[in-house]
Amino acid sequence: MSLLLSGDEGFTPPSTADFNLPPVFGDNPYTTKPVFLVFLSVIVVSAFFIAASRKALVMPTKLQFAGESIYAFVRNDLARDVIGHEFMRFVPYLFTLFTFILTNNIFGIVPLLQFPAMSRVSFPYVLAIFTFVIFHYVAIKHKGILPYLKEIMFMPGVPKPVYILLTPIELATYFVVRPLTLSLRLFANMFAGHLLLLVFILGGDHLLKGVIGLKLVSPFAFAFGIGLTFFEFMVQCLQAYIFTLLTALYIAGALADEH
Image 1 (cartoon, helix red, strand yellow):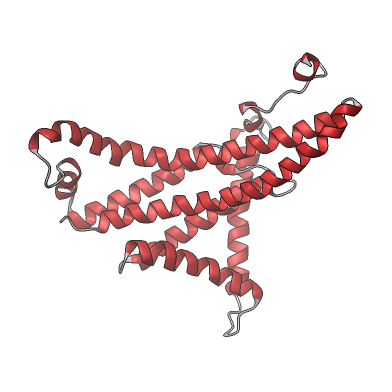
Image 2 (cartoon, helix red, strand yellow):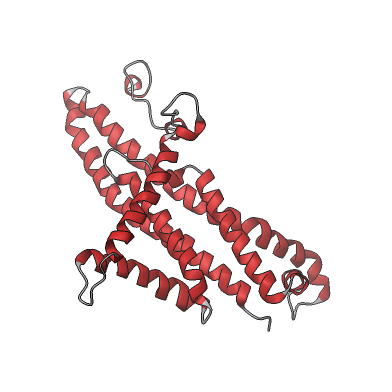
């Protein structure tokens, strides 16, 4: 049994090292696969929606219908229903955010690509910073910087002694916890999902090369890996939705008047 887990012929389980991909060209850290996938996602998203809207018809084609359905979902369900009457000026950002994250997530189950760019934490960090800057800017412009800070630090209706504990918590929530949880939630789900797929697919391949008893077990590992692929697709869509929804909620909170 130990030979199956260690040693020269043993199975080396996937680890964080599988996410640190070497540069494609030379030693330049900006030529790694995740970077190219991010650029590819921009091309794919742009090409899809340009093609879908290039010749818009009253009776839409399947491609036009798909593009309009995605846009309508973000516009109506994530922007209008959450933000309210000022939603239209935020639709471009929310739409870009949703389609960008979704495409990069789905890359994790696309043959030959098979790597979710959002499993590299730097990308979710950058997206969270954009959201962080936008919702604070909107709040400061709408309320003014001093009233906004007062609203954060001194929640109305709270006994004054409670502010000693509540004010630091609220400041940490708005300026540290929100961007961190927003980015780490996306990163952790994409990282864990891809790691599980690696475990079952590579494990099944290893079992297939073993003795006859292990060969009989390998189809179950592959079957479980295929099942996880469908589950991972749902998680990928869900995480793009959650990231965009929380962004819309933060913007809605920034526009809300204090009561």
